[in-house]
Length: 210
Ligand code: B12
Image (cartoon, rainbow, N blue to C red; front, side, top):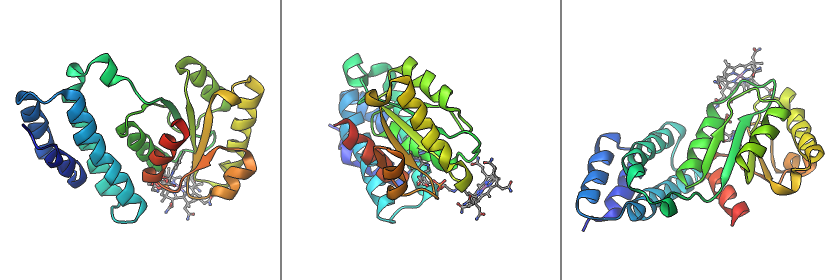
């Protein structure tokens, strides 16, 4: 039987050369795809998230781990049953209108996806209407908004206001992040949560959907 802690450690190390071979050999030895995913891979990304939060891992390393995770999931996908594939919830993420910064938002999306959620990433410069349309289409549980400019922070408020007007506010939790925003601002605009980095963002999403 494969020792899944080796897969967990390879995810943490972000070793893309090794991960696919290890996952394939676990499959060949009869380990169930769902077990490899949960006990090996997701467990690794959970630790990556904690390490990022504590300042023990930095963005380039986290990106390598997230890429490792995607490679491994590609191998497992055809073998996962519908039940094992079922996600913990659907997250719509984007950078608000007027703001083209997307590096941090991409990382947050990858971390959330790696922890077992379905993610629809709309990209940067997204209007409130586009967010609302996608939330309806995907029946999303969480809306994650990013802003990197002080001038686009008010667009987060406008997006939440539009959500209230559309009647969807009670159906979806809103989280925000980005360098100029903080917990006080999140409280002020009526968001449900704020996280300072991608590791804590995926933890926050889990808490809000628990
Ligand atoms: C890269 C960059 C750009 C690139 C963006 C490329 C891209 N594809 O993203 C380009 C060159 C396009 C750019 C343009 C501009 N930029 Co710029 N840019 C930066 C820079 C150097 C890095 C940003 C970054 O990617 N950081 C790395 C990521 C990983 O960190 P992060 O974004 O903070 O994300 C983390 C957290 O904040 C959090 N997070 C982020 N989003 C979310 C969302 C949720 C839901 C959660 C929970 C958490 C979360 O998790 C992330 C991962 O841990 C910053 C300076 C800086 N050091 O931050 C300036 C900076 C943000 N830019 C700035 C400015 C002024 C501009 C321009 C106006 C410049 C100009 N005069 O044209 C334009 C604006 C264009 C526009 N309309 O958006 C200013 C903003 C000042 C302010 N307070 O408003 C900064 C701070 C530079 C400065 N010191 O002046 N920029």
